[in-house]
Image (cartoon, rainbow over all chains, first blue to last red; front, side, top):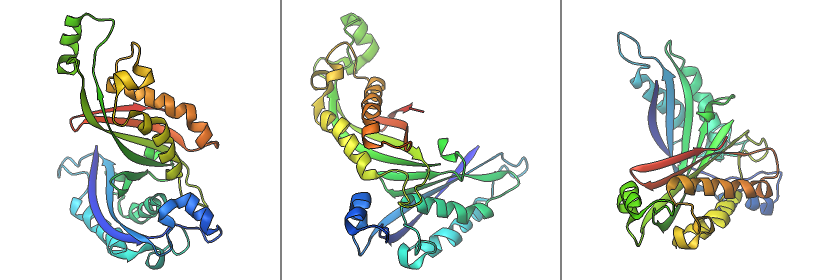
Length: 142
Length: 142
């Protein structure tokens, strides 16, 4: 069984590689490479997979899940400029793909219940663009 | 493996009528979708691609390149058109159901994929077409 919790945060970013020219960065990232950055209302969907506990009827304590997302993702990223304020985006490009992988890395250690595990991180950068990341393997193939 | 999904919209009309069925059979099979002058929808198209994260760009896919492919191969031909009279695949016996429209989209994207994405990745994973808020069709492509 799958269970999904949604959270939102607003942040700014700029996409560009220091090793590339401004022209190459524009070709690669388009308007996202404009040097002073821009913002999004990111929507995060965190999906756990597991079997309900026969006593509690729950896969995972959803209050805990909410707190884990809040503490590890929303609080550090909300109303921040990712490139300047959120590790490791001082070093790597804060594309939606890299952001989804980083969110997975932050959440996964806290979501290892007896009956549940993290299955998928879905990050909407806009309503028209989202990324699914399921860890190192093929989790996004669901 | 990370999956990226991009959403597009187009407005088009169609009429469901099979040249291999009688007028009465068409009426029974397709109901109001068989009305003689056709009708329209605001279609929502979602294209999902998957691949490994490129270490330099931090991307799975160059979204601008995907946008160009979808615009040139699909949206430019479909938007504000009548499938039965304006889109070449539907000028003969093929009925423009959402199922058949998905197959046409898959065929067009696959045919031109290598020209836009010459490397091993990304792969086209899934195409979803929403005819109305109550109808969504999905074609998994690998």
